[in-house]
Length: 463
Image (cartoon, rainbow, N blue to C red; front, side, top):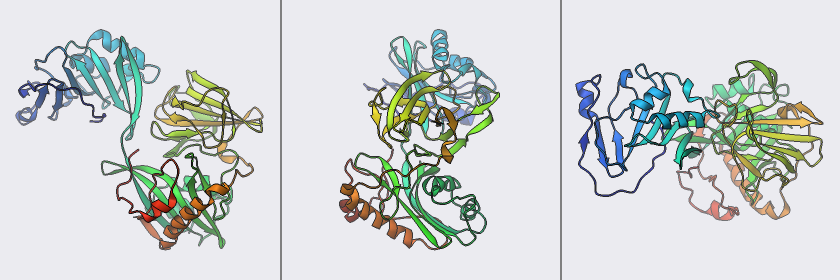
């Protein structure tokens, strides 16, 4: 069962106590249904409960008044509603009602379905200290008791970043070639974000074109979760070589540059975050997953874990920062040329410096991905207006952004050399394979020479 691990102050441990299992448990399961009880409450419960008792409900344990019990809940045949499952675990009526009311703007807990899972921490008097549930493999939400109310907190699990390389030859399309190499198809969209201003991936590709990519894979507990950013890319189209390298400025703002340090990014970003996939595109008629009706969708939805940094798409001024029912937490930026405005919806929280009236530069972090407002999962709804009309962010034609600054050229040259060597070392065609010698974690001021000379650990930093 999911949920972050949390510890409580401990005192002298109480004896191990056997939990009285429900009658529907088998003898074999009952033998394993042990709960270890100490001054911080029940810290573990094992045993495969049937649908009749789905959720690991704790029963028959005498605990002190200040003990907190942790239990896992699963909506099943016996308890088909959230209220019934939580009440059966010993939660009090008033706390359940208050929790449902508090969570409703984010998730309607009165409309759960079979198989939905939750975790909870309960006081022995039935008070609910905490309720949590996963949003996806990387993100979770918890409602924590603060005084007489509940406060929503969103978080992400620690993950591992693995550097991977893939290469191939085009016979029909980039998607088809990536599929043949057993590579993530989302790399096609990410490469289009980088080189799409130089190459029309819908019309310019030719049979025999080649590509090499170095990118991050995100793993958790030994399982692949998603594709991270592309770190370096080479695409040869009609014998013209296009190379791009990801480089972060000293303040942490990343961008993609060619061998000469010229910026591939234009004055507005197509995607102002590192996303997992495009979950919904720009459309004048889309079936809304929350409102359950057909309506325009004047933006692009980029799915990403809760807490993923969202960056200003271009230079400008924050003119709105607030919360609306459908948008959730959102920011609106009016850009320097004043023809363009960008909107960033469903944020979990704002960056502390993202205040109304503040000037921002392209790449500055303004907020973090969430699922506030009308959202079924964590994502950024990114929207662009040009002269007052909505336009598709992925089809903008704009001038180039600034190149690598002179003072950062030495660092860029060293990173460029490292990534260039790694690209060249990839065979003409290879399935995803580990790439050694690249560290994706940059200190506040990137010291490339020290990192290139150092031994790179096999396990990269967690988020």
